[in-house]
Length: 253
Ligand code: MF3
Ligand code: CO
Image (cartoon, rainbow, N blue to C red; front, side, top):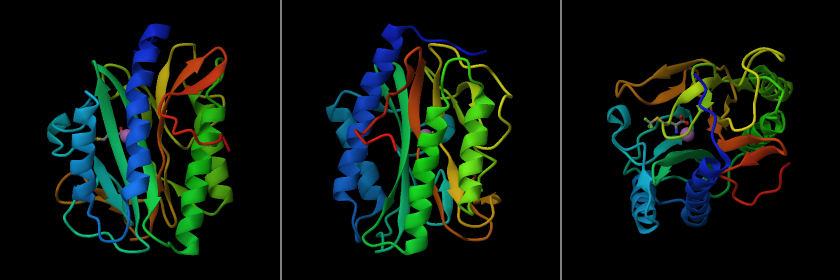
């Protein structure tokens, strides 16, 4: 069942999203070789507390941390660790912020210091694919229009779309209907109506889309050991087009 939100509810989610966007801007500022993803996780917890918000992921189905920190071949749900990041690593920080019971979800990938040309292309294509998906998030379109546009762009660029994890509706719960795959067929799936709030969160691999899950039962990594990146926004469907609730003030590319 899709839970449509009122304008007032969307504004509450936007308030959570603004804090989340600010966290990502802070991470961009502090991330560098030598810092650990556990340092980042601790920073996020303190920052959210100061802003009166709660890290929704901590304790969610037993997940132990405020953030997911997925380095290099890790696709998603990486555990923050005390191992220092190295120059050239790429790391995705994903979190859900709860402000007064309303949620926002956003993941962002960061290059640590100078990254390889291949890694930079993967980052650029993944981010662009998110915005290409968002452009399709218009009243009257269908979920499959978002999925197909992302898949076509990613595959044209020689990369692959992870199948095992999808975007989702979000509101007072982290995961609501509908599912938003990042691959699929235009014209299929639920029709988008005003007041729906969704995440779009493509996980894109340099090699094959196939993944495996670590013994910790959470962390997904590429089966071939090659790089994976992810960008995710929470957005509302409005009659004036998609409203990005976790916008960091970047240009729509
Ligand atoms: N933020 C993730 C998403 O995009 C969920 C992380 S799983 C958790 O759906 F358990 F760690 F929260
Ligand atoms: Co997320």
